[in-house]
Image 1 (spheres, rainbow, N blue to C red):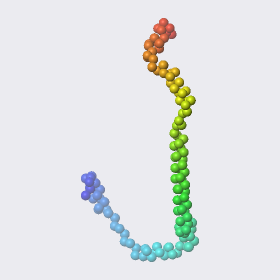
Image 2: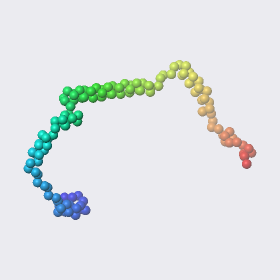
Image 3: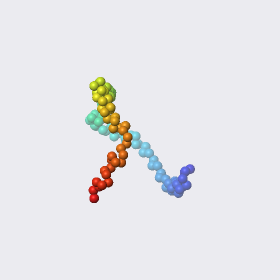
Image 4: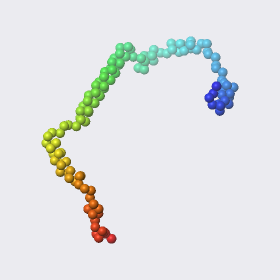
Length: 128
């Protein structure tokens, strides 16, 4: 019955030493009912007891209102945040300034790569 052959000794041990189930007390239900009836009424009307139905409906509506307000606030925050993250369109003066900057720096990027003489100092100026 077991998938693992190593479990066979354990299964046999548990079957041999299986505890017997105690018999149910015939008057257990009557004892429980007697304890419930003997409980003072003030304990059943404690704050931990269930609230009346009108209070339950009010609590449900209150929670629904809080959830609705939370969802609405989340939607508004998302829309406002999205609009703040969108870049604004540059005006003509900014576009002209950007084009002038690109044209002035273009010469340095398309020139031939520098030679070793331009990068390294002459060998006679080495520090000893």
